[in-house]
Amino acid sequence: MLKVIDITPDSPAEKIGALPGDIIISFNEEEVNDFLDYMFYQSEEYLEIHIQRDGQDLYSPIEKEYDEELGFVFEQPKIRGCGNKCVFCFIDQNPKGMREPIYFHDEDYRYSFLYGNFITLTNLKQKELTRIVRQKLSPLYVSIHATDAQVRKDIFCHKIDDQLMEKLEFLTSHGILIHAQIVLVPGMNDEEILDQTIEDLYKFKQEILSVAIVPVGLTKHREGLPELKSIDSEYSKVIIQDSEEWNKKYRNIEGDPFVTIADEFFIQADVKIPNTNYYGPYYQIENGVGLVREMLDDFNAEKDEFPVSIPNPKKVLFITGKMARPLLEKKIKPALDQIKNLDIEFLDIENKFYGELVTVSGLLTGQDILAQTKEISANYDFLVLPPRCLNTDGVFLDDISPDELAKQLNVPIICSNNNFMEIIEYASK
Image 1 (tube, one colour):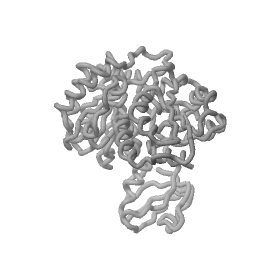
Image 2 (cartoon, rainbow, N blue to C red):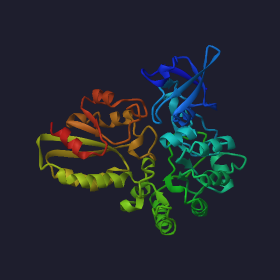
Image 3 (spheres, rainbow, N blue to C red):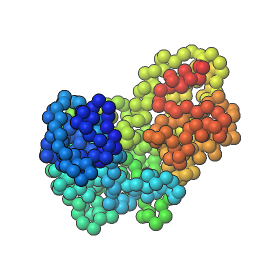
C-alpha cells in the first residue's frame, strides 16, 4: 500500500478525484506495495485503481497513454537495511557524531536497480528474487567479495551458507544482468580464493557483464573491529599483473574485459593508467574504475582549446587527495602552466578525519581542507575542489558546505567536474 501526499494538477489522478491521504491498494488487482510496484503497473493504458479513503474502498477506472504519468505523489519510501556485519564495512568505520543517515546500512535491491547501489543478495528470499525477475529489475549491482561459502561466512559474519550461487543461477537464468564488485582484503579473499571467485562468476558471463575489484578501505576508526591488512604498492603490482592474465582469459559477452581493477591499484603502484579499451563501456566508473582514464582523456581532448593566456594574473589552488596529486602534477599541470597569467598549484590534503590510510579525494572533509588551507588561502584568487567530494546535498561528509568553507577562508571556491576549460574561463573573469 502507498499513501498519497499530493496530486499533480491536471493529471489522471486529479481527474478521478484522488486526494492527499488516499491509500493506493492495487492496480488491476495487482497489489501496489511500494514505488516500484507503482512504476511497474502504472504503465498499462487501462487501469482499475483500488483506493482506500477513510476506511472506504473506492474503485476508479483510468484510461491513459502508455507513457503518461498518473500524477500520484507519495511519501518518501523507506530504504531496506542490511543484516550483514561485513568485517570491512566502511559505514562501521565512521567516527561518532555524524548525521544519522551516514550510519545507515543500505541493502535495498530496488535502489540497486534504480541508482546502482551495491547489494549482497545475502538476505534476499525467494519471493523477492521472483519479484526482481517478474518486474525485470535489471541490471543489479552486487557485492560478491567471494564465492567460497566459508570465506563468505567470514566476510559477512554469517553462520550459514547464504546460497549465493543458487541465487545467481536463478537471476541470470531469467535474464537479469549483473555488475559485480569484489572488495579485496589481503589474506582473506585474494590469491586462490579470488581466482576461484572470478572463475565461478565467469560461468554467468552472458548476464554478469562486469566484475570490478576494488581495494579495501580502512579508516582509523576501527575500535572493536577485526584487524585487516591494507593494500600497498607491492601488493598493487601483483594485482595489476594478475589483471593482465584475467584480461587474456576472461571476456564478457560483448567482448570487453570481464574483470577490471580500480584506479587506486595503478596509482599505488605508480603504473601507467590503462587505455580506454581496458574499461570497455566504463560500467563501474562510479566505483572508481576508469575515473582517472576518463579525466585524462577529457583533459587531452580539451587542452588544444586552451587559450594562450588569460586577461589578468590569477593564482589558483587545486585541492586534491594525497593519492592523486603526483598524477595531476605529472599529467595535468604542464599543459596548464603553458597558459600565460595562470599560476596553478596543487595541494594534497591529509585526511585527519578518517586517517592516513584514506588518500582518495572523494573522502575529504571540509574541516580538513579548512585546517590545512587557512594559513595560505589568502595567497590565491580562488580554490578548486576535486570532483565527487560533495554528496547529493552539496556538502562534505562532515556537513560543511563549499559556501561555508569559502566564507571561513575568505576566498572564492568552485567545484571541479574535471572540465578544466570551465576553470580557465572562471579564472578569465
